[in-house]
Length: 107
Image 1 (cartoon, rainbow, N blue to C red):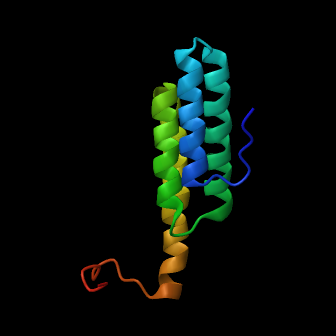
Image 2 (cartoon, rainbow, N blue to C red):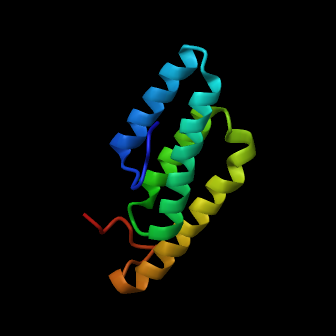
């Protein structure tokens, strides 16, 4: 039983590896349980935290959903995550002073 509280890239990769091992041993339901837990954790984390590093979580969520075969049914969830990510960026932009036009200058 893997318990993911705050999903980090490392913990998600470990969970995916564990799920893959279970799937190879024929324990599809055990693997799905891990995928579901990882995806739920990531979704909650994305919704709760917003912010600049959310793209990492969105990418991890897409990977979890892709590996679990849930991609078709969960496209809406990834879109929701991206929407909340972009809303977060929109809220942060005035504070940081980012202009979408001059992204080249940020060296």
